[in-house]
Image (cartoon, rainbow, N blue to C red; front, side):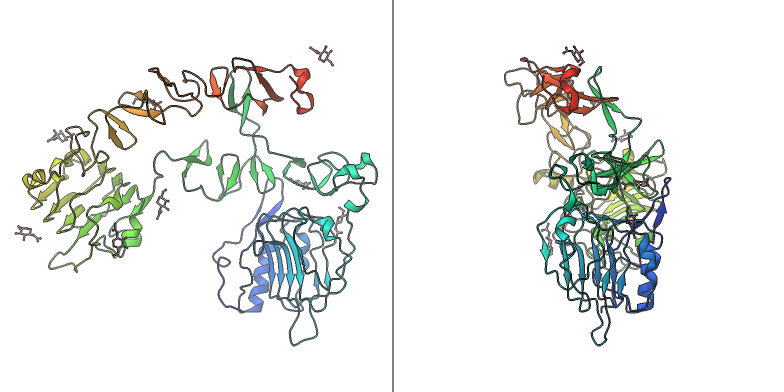
Length: 577
Ligand SMILES: *[C@@H]1O[C@H](CO)[C@@H](O)[C@H](O)[C@H]1NC(C)=O
Ligand SMILES: *[C@@H]1O[C@H](CO)[C@@H](O)[C@H](O)[C@H]1NC(C)=O
Ligand SMILES: *[C@@H]1O[C@H](CO)[C@@H](O)[C@H](O)[C@H]1NC(C)=O
Ligand SMILES: *[C@@H]1O[C@H](CO)[C@@H](O)[C@H](O)[C@H]1NC(C)=O
Ligand SMILES: *[C@@H]1O[C@H](CO)[C@@H](O)[C@H](O)[C@H]1NC(C)=O
Ligand SMILES: *[C@@H]1O[C@H](CO)[C@@H](O)[C@H](O)[C@H]1NC(C)=O
Ligand SMILES: *[C@@H]1O[C@H](CO)[C@@H](O)[C@H](O)[C@H]1NC(C)=O
Ligand SMILES: *[C@@H]1O[C@H](CO)[C@@H](O)[C@H](O)[C@H]1NC(C)=O
């Protein structure tokens, strides 16, 4: 038994109740690692699952000794991940109300249910009976039951009936069957496995999992996909519905978000909305914003904002300079709350510091837009001193130094610095820039270390068209270009002032001298790549899109324009027009 375990202690125990009073708890992912103290192990398990009905994650019951009260496990009805029962010594597993294991995560990438080594090596006791009386569905993954010395007669459990995916059933040994109420074996063939009686008319609704008490989507014991206020549905009400008169997707006031296998009107506390799901954190290409008091993830334009501690603040309180020991902390930062000091040596009161020798510029800070300069070190917020390797600053995104002075001195190879208008970056009139004893600009010119011709006369941070303060002609993202790709190039563009922007992917590329689009979005194409629905170019005509009250079906005419199907054609979700 290992003493170390990851995740459990630092995971705050969270058992939250929704407005519909459904107790949900987060599971664990400790696998077989357990606490060395068995009392603590039991108390933690109990704290985690007492009163929990739905485990959003894995249910792991490991290293529980013989005479513990496990009756609290009776509350659990559903597990979204896997169930692991291992290295225990108790006789009976009271998961009597567990109806469905979804297997969205699998133990050892294979098993939705793993029960093994549940006996005491030097004793005469261990797991004798599985209380899985209500388990009727495993949606994904296999079952592994092995090395449970005191568990007998496994064969009579109909694992095949319980499991949706019948691929893996491994080594089922020595099991005692509980009194299983397996629904499938008595069903009519047409029922696809789930029914509430033997006749064809007794099939469960196709969205049911684990059986049902009647034919409706509200009669299911559990849902295969989502539970929308008691009804089992394929998808939750979507955030957008199609408006057939404007040809556009519009905000749906009745939208719900998916949270595990539930549709919820509001994501739980500490969750954010990503498209139509509740998630713990935004994916890396999105950032969290709050709109109408709803926290949601929106795609970042260019790079996602990331605020970092500067030298002398918070986690870098004791650091005195940026050097090879802490440079990784600054990767992808767009804002530094504090100062930036790059110093080789500062005789008298700083130790000799090391800037990686092969770094000839400060491009690790290429996303840095703001230096806050809140905790000023000798009044200096940007200090680049005695860097004999650095030939350009390459701070291409830097647009503001909120407070403090700038010292760029004694960097023997540094060029381009003389083109920078520091005053433009300052926010107060008292800020100063001391720039001296760097490389002589005349020498820089002789070495062709000058701003790119695509830069305007405003200057640059370094070589290349992506280091300009502004562009002479046009810009594409961060780079200056001579012209936009109006008539050539793989991705055609339009020009908004002096900014080149991409045409929508649904526009057809026009090959003669014409434009591909006149503006942004699928409604500014000159010609459509596929079909046209109202003013918009679309990949396909609406084919069962959710509308406000119905599903919308359209067909394409010879000119590739979409037209609505007659309502009589679209009954039963089938388009025959
Ligand atoms: C199992 O499911 C049945 C049918 O829904 C229910 O009546 C019963 O209370 C559940 N629990 C146990 C322990 O059998
Ligand atoms: C759906 O969720 C409700 C709580 O909102 C619960 O009472 C009901 O039993 C659930 N239905 C199914 C089929 O899981
Ligand atoms: C920096 O951003 C890139 C691109 O978004 C990402 O792939 C990378 O993992 C990030 N690095 C760190 C240390 O955050
Ligand atoms: C700089 O040197 C370090 C180690 O010497 C190496 O890991 C790194 O890849 C080098 N970086 C560049 C840009 O050459
Ligand atoms: C910077 O360079 C000048 C001239 O070479 C020299 O006099 C001065 O001592 C240097 N300053 C530092 C801090 O090294
Ligand atoms: C630098 O920018 C400031 C503020 O935008 C401006 O007033 C000043 O004329 C500029 N200096 C030079 C040398 O262009
Ligand atoms: C075009 O530029 C204007 C002014 O800079 C800006 O307000 C507008 O949002 C831009 N349009 C697009 C489609 O980016
Ligand atoms: C559409 O169906 C209704 C009712 O079945 C029928 O009365 C009507 O004639 C149908 N219309 C067309 C155009 O087929």
